[in-house]
Image (cartoon, rainbow, N blue to C red):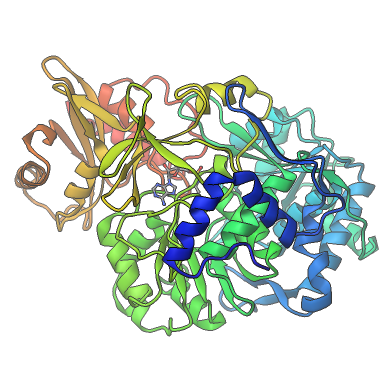
Length: 636
Ligand code: 7RM
């Protein structure tokens, strides 16, 4: 495989420039050389950025599972495709070879067909991180059904809303799931959700915890007996390049979650190409991404990207803190993991623990370590680089979104020199630009602006399920002709990008535009502070003033909080300027967060404004109980 894998910075710039001069030729070659097609395309791309109408590889025919599985069988049949590491370290890991993966996915595909699922039908998958989750996703793709994976931590109402939005015909779930020391009653949650989901005809249930569950006559069936009867081979559905592959819900800033729709060929090409380059993947590597498959990172970088490259991908059922804070490092050591990809929120929480958890394990197998999900702060970056990467495995700080399908801006290991907190350079084929308030493109370096992408790439989402107008309004109307990411960024003196956060996280205080991220960074440098989130609230004189929500490393350790408030403000004053001082500081025991560690600022903004009426969609919140605490402790 070539994928235009670059080996040096010089080569990177050469490829990059070529990819911009002749994007069609660039993607044509990548798609042509690295995949199995039933039929190739008549045209590489067609697009109308005003109408948000984008198509790649026109009229090509393909099945992504043929590329993830079948084509590897001749050379890699016995190679481990999925390495399953269970929640409980006492339970044996499972090595699922490409041959076995073919059989399992085929059986599942045959069951789905038997149960009446056809090309284009939506199937909701609500499963813990177990091999059946991977089989179910791939089985849908095999028969052309559109999978909608819902994270197995979401509530019944969140599940119901997602099922109803895309009118799923079937739900695949389990009798329960393990997460650390807890079990989750997934089937009970599905039963509750389905009270209000008229489209669902059938529920297939995987056995995992042996919990005592209810099976509804005529609707629910255990999956295993059906699989036992099914044939272990299957014919893949021939899919058009632009046939839908999956829907994945992402929380919007207001209102209901957005069902991002990804299609077949473009997503396939993009997830494979980015995986290969960004993780410097080589044949015998053991690759591990700790995300959940219910998140885009899991779709692209646990399943599709690695399998398209014939890799061994670790599927981890557990959590970083169980049975103790050494679990990640123990698993790396145990399986000799070569690439490790996680989120800043996990890095920060592990960095807070005793050294002994890291140092007791041999991490020398690691070659590349990655970060995704939010800006990684300086302190966490260094901790990751020093203690996990041992300053020899480059940190790839990968910027991308559910909407982009795959990584857009990231160092290429051993090619792009890393720089703490910088996602660095766009991948060849990706054209980021920074825009000013007047909607002009900002040229040159050492500038800040709104991050847009000015030419389509194959992995871009094609629409929001059932609401193309919202797709257009959200991403293509603020800066006409361009895709607007919603993020702000700066470009440094050599052209490296640093993502500074969502642009709506800017507060205008006395006429000064203040980004909240740098203020948070300054606060986090205080030795007692664990995390912080700043929002604006209306102020008679300044227009807006700043309100800080702060968690401390050792809760309650500060007897004299007035002193701490003073110290924090003095620190902000000297690092950013007196204008950025906080009018109100509230110490809290936690911040409202999503699974991937993103702080839900919308909720904090409402609280700071004193509006407790409508927090919008909170279904993706990991810790809903914290909202009540914060409301009650609001500083007047
Ligand atoms: C993959 C994922 C997307 C938003 C995005 C950013 C933030 C993600 C980084 C980052 C700074 C990064 N998809 N974000 N990665 N910010 N540096 N490396 O996270 O749809 O769930 O979120 O996440 O704001 O727009 S997502």
